[in-house]
Amino acid sequence: MKKALSIAGSDCSGGAGIQADLKTFSAHGVFGMTVITSVVAENTFRVSDFQDIRPDMIEKQIDDIFEDIPPDAVKIGMLSCCDTMLAVAKKIRYWKPQNVVIDPVMYAKHGSALMAESAIDTLISEVVPLAHLITPNIPEAEKMTNITIKSHNDIKQAARLICEMGCGAILVKGGHGESASESTDILFDGKDFYEYSSVRIDSKHTHGTGCTLSSAIAANLALGQQINQAVGNAKKYIGIAIANAPGLGKGNGPIHHFVEFWKKGE
Image (cartoon, rainbow, N blue to C red):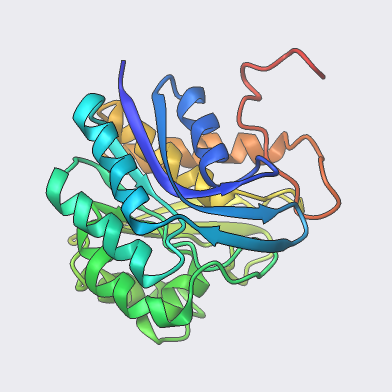
């Protein structure tokens, strides 16, 4: 059985963070493990607060996993501050895992900040170079590059700039794009561009989509897929999960990670 590790924050409402990652790994037939970086009190319409886990405790979690069940892929999500980033980067450099997918989580779906502004430079210098693939959305790519993204050409410029920061490849997610009818994600592998377009689904239930996409890509990489194929299959998976969202919560509700398997409880 292939294994995948999520290093991320927890979402007590179950739609994002490590909870979404574990569901996604399971839906792909991959054994999931977690390292919790922050405990987040949130639901579908707000983040009340979050508490970061001590850096030494983060390091111990990572060590214990790699000493016993080394993962075939690692997904890294919420790293809220410099100390957390440095702890994770230290251990990723030490263990040198394959297939590191980084989702640079800066904001919750409803806009609450999940990364300190002061930590963005540390993200770029210490974390980005560890990524085989990084998956920012448009606002995150703008923060990382200090450019305004309005067009496909802007996305490609941002992708090139972020690749120059040391990552192997970048997928700029187009969910925040201006088109009302279509969403296009753009992958740059350091040499070639690939585009993944899909009809924009009219739904407010998109909580955890970024977490889910990055963990689906990590699961596909763990299963041996090439990066272009892994991204394409992850896009198909998340489209189905959004289209079949269960409609839970008062705000941006969760998607349905197990729609193709889950028949009980409906």
